[in-house]
Length: 114
Length: 115
Image (cartoon, rainbow over all chains, first blue to last red; front, side):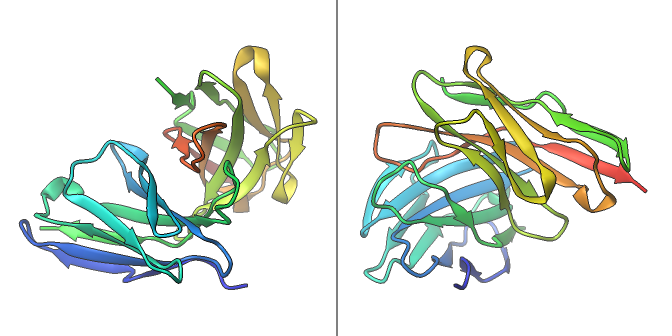
């Protein structure tokens, strides 16, 4: 089975812009979670989607949003980018039917905000 | 508040030395516990997990971890490290109830193994 894929792998944006990141889960997985990884804050949970619905949300401002499509692919959007949004954004997938479940991570999208 | 503490931020060992990385968690309920590893330039990979049953769990590459409920700990061990074990190691907890797969991570331990 192919693993979790994320596109793009690298992204450079300027402050005030918005960005959309994409994640394709492992085939058959219906839960997709997003995490932000920074040197200062470590790995922090952003949100989880299951069956096109947000199932849980972390402690991030409303500028961070996401959605999931009927094929379980997910996107996350960050509007009005700030310098502090520079991070590695990780997507993880799991079966989704009966949490808690093991999550499998993608390679991440590294976002640099200038 | 739910949290995970990893006491060692940086560990340097010589090859063949034994490894133990500490992990303590704070969570008011039943938990699942994980260790993930991030090798240089690679994505986060599952090393091992504890869901229930035998508190001593074995993972890939000779790693094992012991869940001690009374101490809220899930320490990672390896009897003899190799240079290829150089990586960052993350302990994480996922709670039961709430129907969610949210992981709470520790801050990570950077392990450098000298040949």
